[in-house]
Image 1 (cartoon, rainbow, N blue to C red):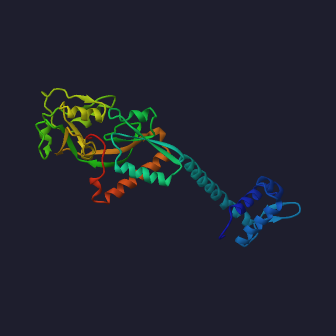
Image 2: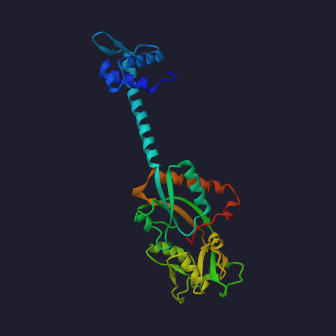
Image 3: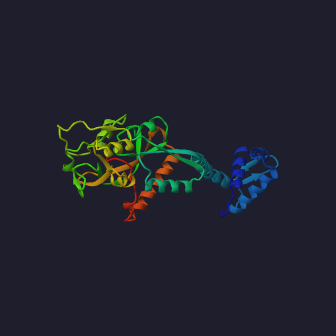
Length: 315
């Protein structure tokens, strides 16, 4: 059956169900002679008769009955595959709104480039997600998916690719007593008033972005809170507090009045692509695959970790 045409199979199926050349032709919007041509071509490929035709009746041969039994489920499966592919293709057109916190990093930009080359009919938009409200845009349907800092413990959200693990730095003003230190330990931060994230973010998330495993002193006054990274850096520059940031974020956000000091002994920050469980689409899955490819490619390049700016605070 090398080179069999789908039209030959459709002609046979229509004729097997109608047992009438005229009705089979009308069903497929063809002429009776065309149905006969298609049937003969199929029988020649197989090497035997599938249909017996007399002046009064049309019936399947035993081989035709056997062929029909095997063809029906295969033909149905083929149509299912085609319909699924068409549906996926339609879903991959349109738009994809991606939220991000802080700055867009190399992982995200590489994934966007890969995704756009694979699916040029899908228009992507980038929307900044407030530092103080990492999940609100997803719940309000303002974005389809978002790149946010871990942890994510939301039962309605799916956590996709996790990437851009980076060590932290402490942002301090030029007047701070720690200025001039080559590095710090977690213990050095005990008495530092760390600026915290306020707003509608869940408590577990804001706690993770503030002291993140640091020892605390009960006598330390409450730290200031901010809703955006810009607000936090402004307070640091004014010597109102210090702020934990990822190393690449400090590199990206240079400020003449702010110094960044490496901190050892704290867990790395990490980003993840997340989306609402009830609004998973082919577009989101395809972008998640592109992001996974970007992170795996970066892992194969030893120098990549030095040039991938991760967003925001310690998670």
